[in-house]
Length: 350
Image (cartoon, rainbow, N blue to C red; front, side, top):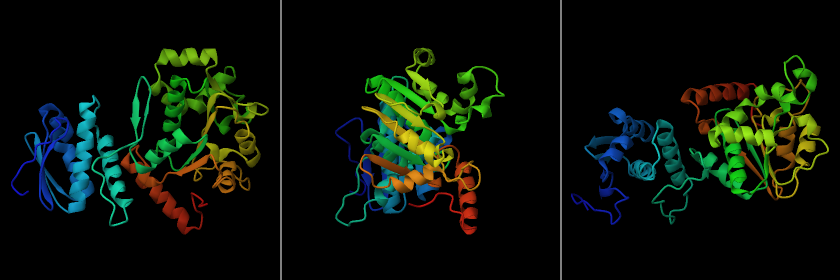
């Protein structure tokens, strides 16, 4: 096919001319092509940096040269991002990073020589009326799929991987669909009321600073006035962990954040609150346990005891899943490698 250009039958897809490790992608919409390549071709430069290829823009076309595997990953990345633009989405650096991760992961998962390479990228997503969240790493993809199929999901790993944000997004989606009647948010940082006594205001006002990350995610997913009305009506409930005892949480999406700071008894108490038609999501980072020395983390124990239990999914994030800032991933790796050499595993293996 050298020297020939194949025009796709669908105007949605780019046209391709290719050989062993060199091909040209031509995109029909000039404006979308410009957004796809990025200002000063910054998105193409990112492709070059991450995949070790050469990508040169020529008008609304891009010539890609390099290793066969890497160039095919670049093709799937650009194809996916172009399709996103056509559907009304935006392409930012984080989107490019995520698409590259998924393209590489799709190849890494194919170990049998008879398996065909995926022609297009497919990423799990969470959609609310206000926003659509698309997985940016293979682990996020697995996490979103686990949230859809399992009644109880543990999302554990370092900061910046999106585990709490995606949990809240999923809860908002369930509420909008009518799959649940309420959202319940909880964190163990408020388990002892006396620790909050010095703060002004009622219990909600004392608790709010601890739950701010959950609130921020809610406001991203739902209109602000709707969030406020839902809180007032009790549809969105802030439930300090100490106040959960004795309750049965039915028809609800229940999120326990910072779960590494629960004790064994607190975790057992929380998990056994699960009622009919409810979903429970537990997030935490076992490398950031703030409990007194000698007190075992309820999260760590639960991960050990509940491994393999039907109906429970455990998804582990790593530093490679950090989507916040590239420097955050490097910080996590630096800390983890230091603890490992000291014989203190930051994320205990089950």
